[in-house]
Structures are given as C-alpha cells and as structure tokens.
Length: 315
Image (cartoon, rainbow, N blue to C red; front, top):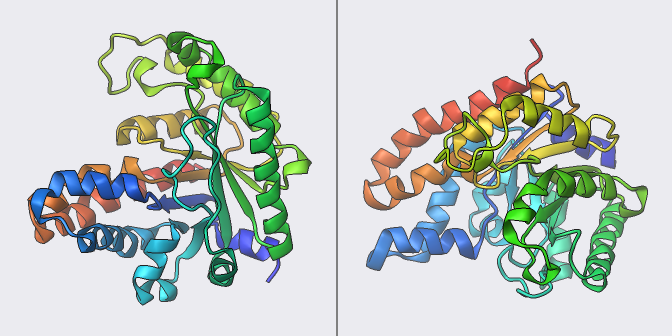
C-alpha cells in the first residue's frame, strides 16, 4: 500500500476527523488522582478502551500510543484507521531541551507500524529558544521524516508551542506573540526538507483571550473577527495539509474555534481532538461508576464527535 493509499484511509468524506487518546503518564496520573486509593492500571486501560471502541467508531481515525495498542488484541480488528504516536512517552522529556524521545524498541515497534495508516510525532518547539537546541530538534524531526519515507507511510507532525524560560521573553509577551509563533511553525514545517505530510497545529490564539469564549473574561483581547483575520494570516497561503489539535481546550471553545476556521475560508483538513472531547468524563468514570460513564459516552461523547464533524461538512 502506498503513502497516498494510507493518507486516504485517514479521511472520512475527504476530511480528517480523528480522535486522540495517546496520552501516557499524564492521563494515568489524572485518573489515579481522581480514583484515589482504589486505582489500578486496569482502570487506566479500561477508560481508554471504552473511549476508543465507542467514540473511535465515529471518527475517521484514532491516535494510539504503543502501550494502549498492545494492551488489548481487540484494537487490531477495529475498522477505524489507526495512527501511532511514534514517541517513548509524550511526558517523558528532558525539561531543559524538551527533545522528544523515540520509541525504545524500534525494531519491534517498526513491525507494529504495519497496522497503522500514519505516524504521529510531536516536538515541543519555541522559535525563540536557543538555536543550538532548535537545530537538534530539526535533526530529530527530519530523522522521523526519513523513517516515514522509508516505510512509505504519512508523517503527521505536531510542533507543540511551549513557554521557554530560557528564551528571555516574559510570559505575557509570549502569550501575545502566539499568532507569530504559529505562523512560523506552519511555514517552517511545510518545507519539503522535513517530508511532513500533515501538520497538527494549535489555533493561533489562546482560548482565555477570546471574547465570547468560555473563560473568566478578564484577559479577553481578541474578538471573533480578530481570530478570523489571524487564521487567514497564518494559513491562507499554505500548501501543506493541516489539522487543528484541541490542546485541552474546553469543548465549546474548540468547537467555536473550528467554526471560526471554517468561516475564515482557510483550507483546514480537519481536526485531531482528544481531551476536549473526553476529559469531562474522567471524574464520571472514576467516581460515578461504569453505567454513568457509558451513558456519558453514548450521549454527550458521541454528540461532541458529531458536532465537530458537522463543522467540516460543506454546506
């Protein structure tokens, strides 16, 4: 199967409407804290399994981590196309350089990759960071690009903007500079040298700063019109397909942002959404029992996936 065939598998009616549930130690810690003394690792995998089997069926593809995929043989037989997170652990990263670690058992994992339609790789990146560190990151990003080329499989890359305390820019200035950063990230990683097929990227504004979004309203500086113009500035002349990630936004804020992207007429391929869909169900799973959790999935969870997909449909 060619890379283009794999790429087409990722789409539903020509759009990318993917579910993310690849978080490792972070999600496990959240469930452990909510569950309390009764927590076991089985709880962690059960939560993820129910999300995948019941919400993934409505998505165009599902993003897995290795541990979750290997935890239950049922995942091999699901009909929804699969994406593998090509990382050791998204939260097992050197705090100074924040260079993502590759999977530990590459040979074994490369065999597993045959089950997937794409590789996802992420890297924390701040354009204002030390150029020496950023150059090391460029090398790793290109290395994964070559791996994807050799495997003839699409490369889904996620440059994840972060506040670098060593960059000599204060935090409020960093927040205001987000549109500039996102424009840089999209332009930089659209270059052919990285061999990236899809860029998974954040919205170029912070949800807490948008008037009309669910927030405290204290620091709102952007109107919907501002956000629309910012998205045009960042993406309207792009050639590399891109999808928006949720970055843990409140669901309605992510939905509104996606609607803004559509009304802005930018050529967005779709979304890869995780926490914004399912994070509200964690406490229900941990404290209200399996029946309440499944009720939430089958009503609220499925409605959320469908609402996001509806935005992608051309009217």
